Amino acid sequence: MTTIIGGRTHHAVALPPARSRLLRMCVHLPVINGEPGPGHARILVIADVLLRTLEADGRQLIWVCGLPDPSPERGMALQTFMTALGVHPPASFTGRGEALDVLGGPAGVNVFGDGRHDAKEGVWVGVGSVDGAGAHGLCPAEVEDLLAVRLALLSRPYYRPVTLRPRDVVDAERTLVRWRARVAHWACSLSKPVPQEFSRAAADALATDLDTPAVLDLLLRAEVADGMAEGAKFETFASSDRILGLELIREIGRVPLPEAG
Image 1 (cartoon, rainbow, N blue to C red):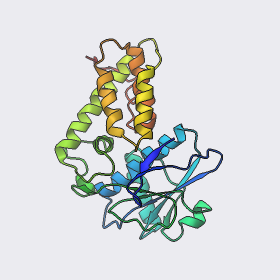
Image 2 (tube, rainbow, N blue to C red):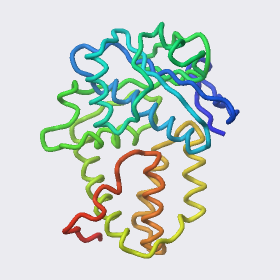
Image 3 (tube, rainbow, N blue to C red):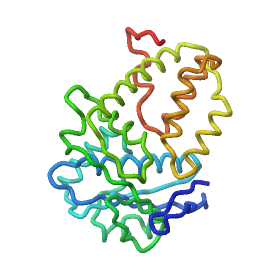
């Protein structure tokens, strides 16, 4: 069962456990002036990881992205932004008053940013604010991959305000480059199962208030674990990436492969 610190109560709240029912989620974005920025990115990334976590637990979900100023042009721009961030597309981009019609019922989960919690029903998930540059400054000049922003955001507890600095994104991209190279190298080894202690610890971390920093710490430890077979390291990183969405298997099959080590 996945629990979240509810924005309504500020206490742990169990997300609806009934797997036989469709779980409806609405992600409420604040006003977008010009291009989407770090705050929008964080709300979307956390919602995406929550969706992936619940789906891995056997839930079926539908979600919409609620905008204060919806338009076809805004939806297209957001879709491009979300694709670069590795966020699964919503069923629809809607005005906040239209989400009920699209979802076919009230949202069981509402994801908010900027401290706003105006949904009347469901679990509230409050995402902390981000202090940082606008959309064009999300990635410094030396960084090309917006997934580095995703990694930088996932390295902090989702509910705490953060400052996203250019060097944080640069460091995150360096980690992505290293991990992708090593995953490609490990993919050449005989496959081994994910160690049970890792899979249990990762599942527990995600089920307990979506603790992505703990999962990333587990990966850092697995990366340098001397007693862990390379085939097991590959499966460990690949399985975790189904939730984290960092495209860690991107370099498999590309030549020449850099040496891992």
